[in-house]
Amino acid sequence: MSKIIITCAVTGSIHTPSMSPYLPITADQITENAIGAAAAGAAILHLHARDPNDGRPSAAPEHFNAFLPRIKQGCDAVLNLTTGGSATMTLEQRLAAPMQAEPEMCSLNMGTMNFALYPAAERIAEWKFDWEKPFLEGTDDLIFKNTPRDMAHILTELGEQRGARFEFECYDVSHLYMLKHFVDRGLVQAPLFIQFVFGVLGGIGPDPENLTHMKLIADKLFGDSYTFSVLAAGRHQMPLITMSAILGGHVRVGLEDSLMISRGTLAKNNAEQVARIRRIVEDLGREVASPQEARAMLHLKGGDRVAIQ
Image (cartoon, rainbow, N blue to C red; front, side, top):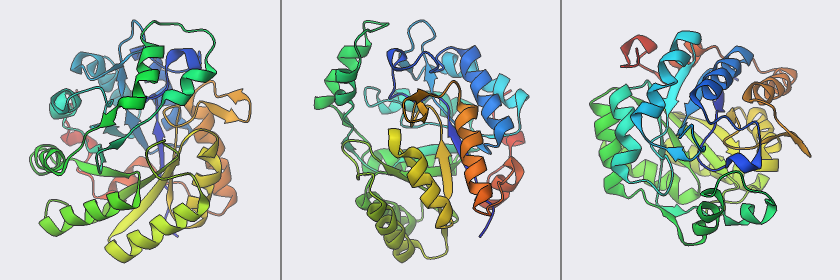
C-alpha cells in the first residue's frame, strides 16, 4: 500500500457555534487549529471561512485572507479551499476566495443534492447566536446546487486556468458517474483524488457496505487512475475512515465532519482527531504521507505557485 494521506477539515459550514465551544470561528482559531493539525500529521488542510463575529459560514475573501497567509507561513501542508462553501451561497460567492487565492487544491462537490441538517437543531437547548436555529431548521427545504454547467465552470476557471487540482467529493454513487462524464469530456485528468462522503442526510448512508460498493464502482469506472479517501459524519467518522485505511485508501478527519474525539467527548481541537487516526493507521502498518509526498502523489503544482502571500 502507498503512504496514507491525512486530510483535516478544520471548520466547515455545517456545525454551528452552539454545538461545541471548540469549533474554530475566528481567524486566530482557524489558524491555530490548522497549524496544529499539520503538526500532528495532516498533509492537506481543507478550509472554509466564518464570520468571526458570530461564526456564520462566510465566502468573503477578506475572511479567508485573515488566515490563509498565516497558515501558509506556519506549516507546509497543502491548502485545499472549498468551492462548496454553504448551500445558502451562490456559485459566484463560493468561488470568490479560491479564484483570488489560486490554491494548489480545491474541493468539488459532484452533484446537486438535498443537504439536510435540520435534525441537529433538535439536540441543542441553548443557542449562542440568533442565526443558528433558523439556518439549521431551514435545511428541510434547502438544495445544494452544483449542476454540470457549474462544475464545468469550476473545472475550467480553477483547474485549467489556475492550475488547481481537486478533491472530488462524491456523496452518492451517481456522483462517480458524473465524475466519469467529466473525465470523458477531457476536463479532468488523472490521477483523480476522490473523497467518498458518508452520513449526510441527502447523500449515501454511513454503512460499510456502501463504502465497499463505492470502491467497487470507482474501480470499474477509473481503474488505476484514481485514489480514494473517506470522510464520514459524526459518530461514523473513525469506524469508516479506519475501514478506508484497511482497504488502501486515505482518510479525512476534522471538526467539519465530527465534533467528537470519542463517544460523549468533544474534541478540543482538530489536532486531537489527526493524532488519533494517525495512531490507528500506523498500528495498521500504514505510513503517513508528508505534505511533499502528498503533492507528488496527487500531481499538485506546489505551494510556491499559489497567490497566497
